[in-house]
Image: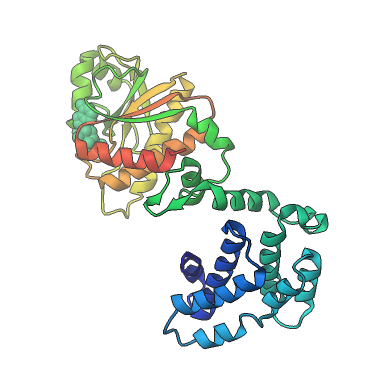
Length: 347
Ligand code: AR6
């Protein structure tokens, strides 16, 4: 049944997905059956099974009539001791040789196993490493049982988060992504904190106000010398009375319905802050939720941009940053960032 459901994602017609159910059944019985059953019995059994699972389908008769006579099944039965003979016979038969070749190849491959397949079929096969890995994953990776799925981080990375290649991921994984609830002006064990500022850099409400209060008036004095900062860019100062070395100030975008390049500007805020961090040898940095307070940026979208942008930066600057922390003022904001960290940095 799962075979039919998966095939129906791309082949919505029952004559497309029911044969997939048949093939799934055959392969499943060959590979996992504990008793030794003949290929002929398995094929006949598949015919009964498909009749049961698609009872009432108007194409059922058409399908069951050809099972047993179908050229792919015929060639598999006729050449069940020789993979090459079976595949050559089926692709030379008139008709749609790519699918019949695949079906016969699948059945004979499962029956005779990998080593019995002649080298010439394997050596020039494109993406063979990926196929072998996927076949292994499907057989042993994420086991499904009657109570649900076993949790498997590798499976999640490859098939849910679609991150197949993991060289860069390894590098990124050396950087910790953390979200905590708290006040960013307290000690979070980082060298720099980021201020969600405005373009004047002369202080304001929200986190900006809290940072200036905690740092003392010297921060404002240094900010006065900076001549403001454009939205999406960043400037760095010392941290004065704050329990860290630097403050990186970045004005986020005002939310204006999403049509004023807000997403681009917000991503640019994170990148600009991280560029300054790298230039100044900062390895540990804490961000607030830029733009989601007074500037009204929708929280989930802002959190996704934040984590995704930082992740991309980290991947492209291997070894530069050790800790990325989001210090968030309330539970809703914390949950939004936690969800995105789980999504973008899960291993
Ligand atoms: N620690 C951590 N997060 C905080 C703190 C704190 N001490 N205080 C507030 N937040 P906002 P924006 C959270 O409004 O949307 C200023 O006036 C807050 O709950 O500070 O980028 C500037 O001068 C929210 O989740 O920044 C600008 O004019 C997040 O920090 C304007 O506000 C950001 O909220 C910038 O607006």
